[in-house]
Image (tube, rainbow, N blue to C red):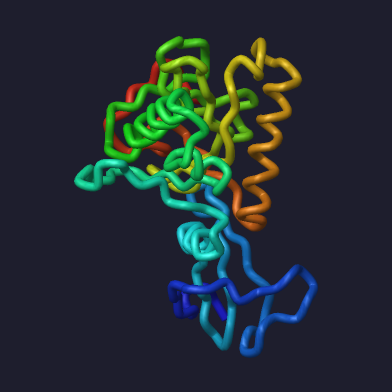
Length: 229
């Protein structure tokens, strides 16, 4: 049967098991992996149907499992142009309770910095050392690990994550910038690898978005301060 003969449907649930194990009743084959515009896409085949599994559905599944949480704006009237999902350990401090007023103020500013992304603020990105870039794509560039910089007030924080889709960022964790030390330090590399490990736990069958230019990651209101490729 040719590809054109498949009936393509959007799946609401991923009904497969671990590789090599039997599939759920009614499913005839293991998932089919294809690449569309550089993005790894999962299809499920059953009774003549080719069922598309988007990473957006997988994100919804992780939210339902409380393994990812949508970062909502503190001001509910803010229009969401982009989306950030955060791991629970990163999300909890955004809303408190906090240990003291200093922590409350620092987490409030981090929340505001994340809101800036979600609300459609003008995002500056870099791969270099531009001091005031909002986001940086970290070395090695092909690994697709990014940081969001939350600089003020001290202490400065770095939020690690990857793009799942255009305008959709998955934040895995945050670190104190002082702890990370000099560029290319062991601490930087450890947190870089931690981001990749956490991503694979969340999305074992999906790679992060791999773009050719800044607009593949952020569709509008973005300034590239240095080529991201």
